[in-house]
Every structure is written in structure tokens, then in C-alpha cells.
Amino acid sequence: MEILVNTDHNVSAHQARIAGIEIEVRDILAHFADHLTRVEVHLSDESAGRSSGKDKRCMVEARPTGRAPVAVTDHAGTVDEALRGALHKLKRLLESDPARPAGRRAHDSIRSGPRSGRQ
Image (cartoon, rainbow, N blue to C red):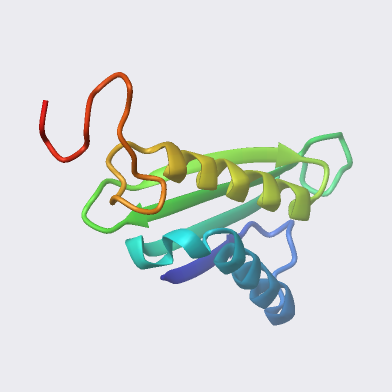
């Protein structure tokens, strides 16, 4: 899983911070690492440095193997909070995606019958 971190000119992006972001992405999305080709993190400060509440924005786009990309956005008071919020949204989205590869949570549904194709 390749991880790319992008920031606007209002968010600092020194190497140590980028490395920390990459570690957090890998930790939170570890369960999906074999099924994601790339994760792009976009961090921005929508108020250009002025403090005005939830003005830090994190958009995370994931590219699942063989499928269309999915993206989520979170706003928070700090960049770290926005990052964590967006990553947790993405994790929930990937867990709830019915097209995801069968994994440890695959099970029969009371609504649709067995997953083996039998009806």
C-alpha cells in the first residue's frame, strides 16, 4: 500500500510529521493493506492560519484493488484530529462495503441467504 501525503501551504509538512502520518494510516488501515494499492491524504487549513473552530480539513482517498476509488473528508480543530476522524470514517466505509473481498467478517445474512451463491 503506497501512502501519499499532500498539504496546502498553511499546513507544515516536515519529514517527521509525514512519517507519523504514514504510520497512523498503516496502523488504522492495516486490515485492508493487501486490498489497497494507494492511500492519498490531503491536509488543509481552510481559514489560512486563523483560528475559527473546525477549520482543519483532511480528505483521504483510498484506491481498492480493481475497484473505483473511495474518499472521505473530516473537519476538526486540529490537523491530527481531522486526520484521525477521516481515517476512522474510511475504515468504517471499507468495512461496510459489500464489494469488499470476503474476510473474517464474511457471514450469511438473514436477508440474502448464504454467501456461497446458493439461494
